[in-house]
Length: 284
Image (tube, rainbow, N blue to C red; front, side, top):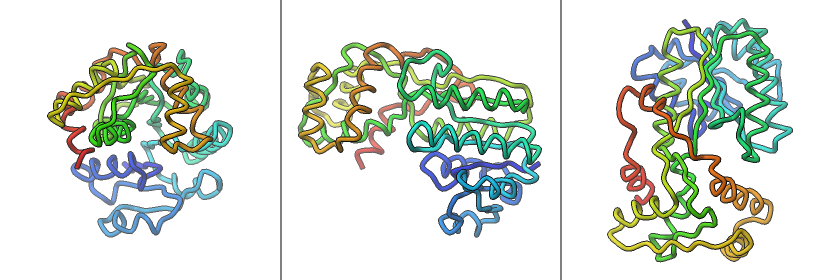
């Protein structure tokens, strides 16, 4: 059985690949990558590295050939581009006769009001319509998304937020990746949805964990969205990114990422990596 994964050199995909290599023979792993040169290390270890570009569907036919279980990792970019590229990947999976698709989706994708959700809903729809059995890995927020805030606090800044008491189910990228590898390496062909989340915490609770690691008190500065945006401008956040960072705070405030679920620990077959451990890694 061949296991394929897209984005194998990316931040998430590279961890998935490393995790698979612990238990799956390298020759049974297919890495579909846009730039094969970046995957030379995987190729040297025996992984079947293939050129696969979501903007060149013909390359995906070759990249997915013979793959039984395929991980499609959500790409970056604007919504229209992402939807088009994801559709190309799903269509190619159908043409290649892939038997099972694992897709990295968004927590509560069907009902989420988060501005990112339409891309994930559309892609889940493409996969359902394909008729291929699937596993949707609906990931909550990555702890690594808070690296900038954590470093700012280390430098003496307050923990800035406009999310009020909204909660987030943070977990480490490595935990999400290991969960994906576990599903990929499994044998089930039954369609299933996993809501993957850590224990939901408020911004103040997260700041307290950071403060404990740093050995200092962390002041939480709650502001409104307008003030938050102004502070982000002063901090050098690019103008194009401002609506995104503000919308995330607003969504957290509205409870969009406040999801309770034990699915992540179930897939990992162990407790989640403590946030304190993940924070220490971000501070090194």
